[in-house]
Length: 231
Length: 121
Length: 275
Image 1 (tube, one colour):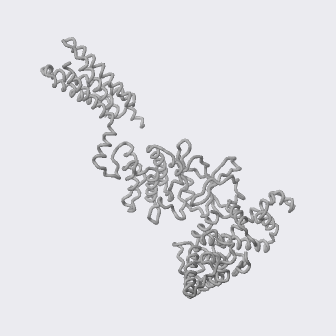
Image 2: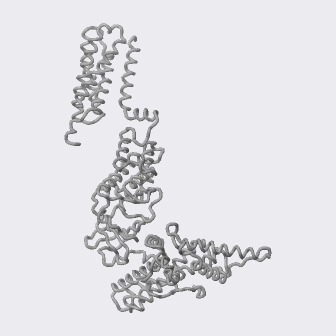
Image 3: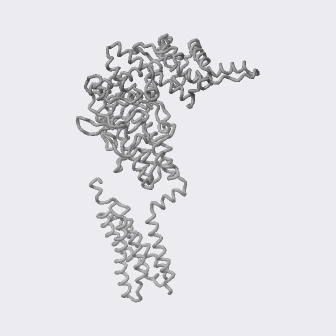
């Protein structure tokens, strides 16, 4: 993950006070609620623009910034109708409209000048459709934020051991230690390893739920999105 | 309706019709009333026994077998009595009797209340 | 914190698994996945038996107790309901073996066998309605056919998140008539229109958009199926005359054959008597 795209990144606060988008919108969508939306959606929006409209890193960042700025100015959130689509889909379609308008305006300026339009420089990208990539990035970002919440929570409540075991096992990218190896490493019984892991996963799940609650319209959409996460 | 009653009624009707077909034969026309009465009586006997059987056994196949056998038996008796009066008509009497018996046996299976209905089945 | 694809997949997997801490169950394997939740095979440690655990994202509604009280040979018995440590809710129920109706229907079965399955589903529905329970989400995925032909209807009264297209009645408030609609859709699913126009008409009637045009109860629906199976005219269809004759002929085939035999015998005897 490039550091330069981590704008509006993790806020690290304990998120038990998340309210649904609708509740937040009713109270004029407080800044904190907007922060949560941006924290979760900045990267997916950026990636989507970059792939769909073949923008450079800088252009995509500008467009993303512009999108959220214009969303805040116009009554973007009050216009969201949860009976028609999920908030995730609503955002994606709004981004597409916004970026297409901007893109079109840019092209009109360029027309006649014979200027080729910029291609993406670093091609790590896009074997998947922009829509799939948007969803994938959304999911990744959601886990990323929830993991951060979990770590902060563990630090605040003195559960470093739990987090270390979780990090060693569930966040390990290479060969995982077995439960018994972990028991030896931390000098605790295997059943405790099991319990710590169960606790950490459960808590991570709760943070994910909370993050989602803050960016969905209510119970129905929340459950739908939860279900979609595991698919 | 009781299956025995069904057997008696259909035996009577079909027996009468079967007897009435003797009208096609000029030589039997003079004795047509006797033939129709005899044929109806024979039909009723077949119906009586078929109906009684249908109360005991619920099976269309067996109903037809029993009905046709009874039809054949009684037609044979009639044919023997007829032969004693002169020229025998075994085929003419027994073959239709056989089929009418089958029809009566079938109808007693299909129609009327079975005796077991009292048990609520 | 870096989240690579493989870590993400792993996390999604482990977090999706139900957290059975504090319950009497041990997870065995996933056995099914539907619109409403995931079903796992689990072992009940206390009673040492296998059960099916249905884990739902949505909370179980107040109807659960009512549903748990349903006792019918075609209704899967629920042993327990509860909330998991991770906040999800679950049902523990009898573990079934057999094929889901969508798979069952893919095999070849006779019309009367298919109607037998439908009748079992209908009888379970009629019973549930008599107990004040509405299914709300009847569809092939919620019906199982066991290896001995036993039929089970599952997932009672769970308010479907999105409903199931093709099986959900158009009205917004679900009631008994919505179940009649779904049963009609199930009939349509099981029997193709070319099998029998009368059965297709029964399905059509049950699936009327205008609720007043539907059968007013599941029992009325089943009664029409009965009429069809007995070779009688069905309420749902005003049949053309040729169909009525054909139905009469097939109902009375044996009698017609016997009468034909009699006529033939008489004719032969009449024409052969001169020889």
